[in-house]
Length: 260
Image (cartoon, rainbow, N blue to C red; front, side, top):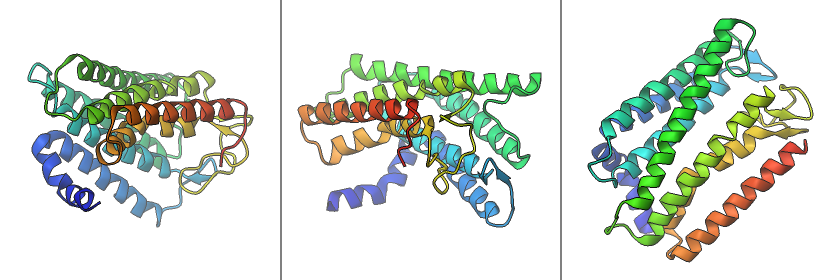
């Protein structure tokens, strides 16, 4: 555990060295989320039973987690990978999403599932397109981790990165299930009572839960594979269990059963 604490203490310095561009973009999103949370303490903006600013806060935090994870992983790729294009692609696409979601939140209007006007419908489509491009780009990076050589990486850690990306991609595209339903709640309309901040439904199925759980395999599995799981077999076992849990969560949600 001493090594863990030491590594975490040096994390920001090392991350900045590895990818300064994405380091600052992730930091900007973290500061933005903190600022929105502070504003939410003084500004009443209720929408669908919760504070409207909680949604852009969650998206900004998620963007920070994704950006820093990918900045860390892409450092291992060889020089054939176009890192600068990936950096600015992520900044443009995810920056657009976070900005638009925050703008609509301040207006107490939905950003997702909003087809009330041609403009809002087009923006919803553009957000889906932005998320798809980032996910496909991430999938391509995952393929690179299978076909390139990484002689200096421990095999268990390498498999943790591979499988973390693999599960992330699957459940990132799970977002299209919500988009096709034009709702994230199963068994009722959106806006039913939910848990604080996350607002996951207390009484019905909620497809956001598996979206969150599955996508954050990108951070959880590599982290555990580096610090705790010391064999490839244990990493494969953890990833299988993680994937099975995600499928179980999805199944329960589609049945309209609350998990919280």
